[in-house]
Length: 254
Image (cartoon, rainbow, N blue to C red):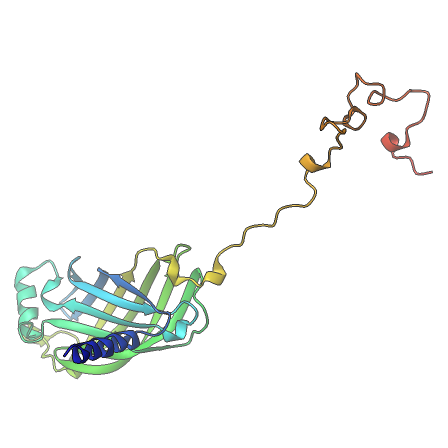
């Protein structure tokens, strides 16, 4: 009777293991900043995603930037344009009660490959963007700043067309807002040294051979030989006679 549950648990474990690429590091973040810019002949304004309005999960393979994938979710009712009436109308236009989230899935990247390293990396993120229940494949240029401790800062700017996502444009004095909607996205992750390949870690410098502590000759009793220490109180360690030339001190080449 126990064989069947054990088989099911084993199968589930294998499926979970295959869900992420081998060696991938999963980064979860709630630091997702999004800005929409709305344009109208009579007025322009921005709508910002509130601090708790979005989250993301990023899969990083330290040795292969090209294997990066990600999922981002933004809550439609968490955008703020500093005008309650306008925000309510926008929520109605987006049908937020039916389609409560905007989702962006990064399924592949192109334009960069090889291991992650501190500095600036640029690539194009590709995958479906779902707005108002409509999914469309998008290709978005992304710039990433990689910190020395494995912290990441993603930045992207792109534009969508509202009508392509079945969104009826709101009007002001009978004139609709622009169809083009510029969007700015910024995502930050916490430091995680596992993002960087182990080969990037600095190696300790090898110990120098023949240190000073080992170069001083000693007598059989373990004491330093006065002749080699240059002690002026000992005959062999004192200054040489001024009447005799000392070629070691003058450096004269004969």
